[in-house]
Length: 233
Image (cartoon, rainbow, N blue to C red; front, side, top):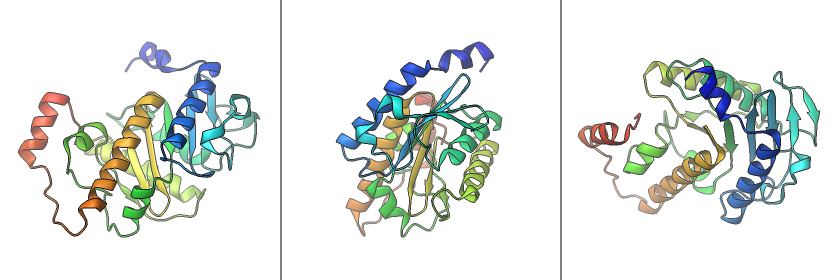
């Protein structure tokens, strides 16, 4: 991706404020977030916007969003979410991981079925390749060991996972923080929200299946998705 293409991905600050609020309300209204759990950030040409700490994503005010400079120093708005360090690590890692898509936005939720699945999942990933749209729209989701919310070690673990999967030529768009929730990133918030929805619904399907032995997509079926839809599994 050249510099001109990267520049074209940036929203104006005003557009980003409105889009964060729109996506936050949509996720809240449809039950993908609850109470004051979760946060959203967008990368600007010169810095970042992120939802305030302990904010309800369903009732965001564009003027309350925290504006940070490229080094992460807050410039305006209410106090930034404590997870900004993690978001910045995701941006940085996707910039430097060969073959990865540079993240322009990050969504973190405490989505019920993902969190529930993480309570018993043994890793190294949250979910197997059980549906074509999970493979195509989400891809591999590494399970990150538990860290307390805001722990900088969690940010380092996520960055390591991004770099590791890039080296395997399977760049990732999401990780699962054990007992906390998923972090999903993309080039725009609508795409990130869609990937988050697919991830949560896949976790729901796995739980609905219960003790039934799940049949994963075969290598041949996954290869067909690669050839026809450029899946990166």
